[in-house]
Length: 69
Image 1 (tube, rainbow, N blue to C red):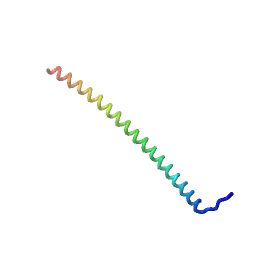
Image 2: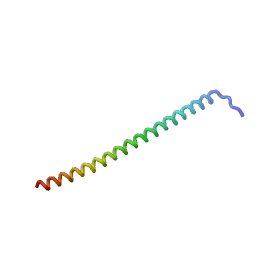
Image 3: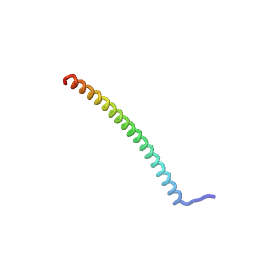
Image 4: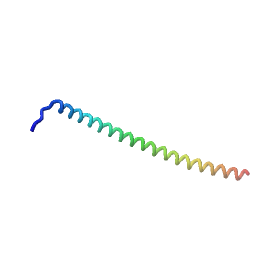
């Protein structure tokens, strides 16, 4: 059985094009999510390093104050 309906063929092509565009956009979004995830990990690491550095300097200040006091 053959179906020679030009309108259906055009709609099928449009649907395939939309699918391909959507697939490409999805890949781009996945890449962007990975980049964002990496940036968040870097920020978390920076926060942890900052917190540990600040707590060390707080301890040092307490020692200095104790010796001066």
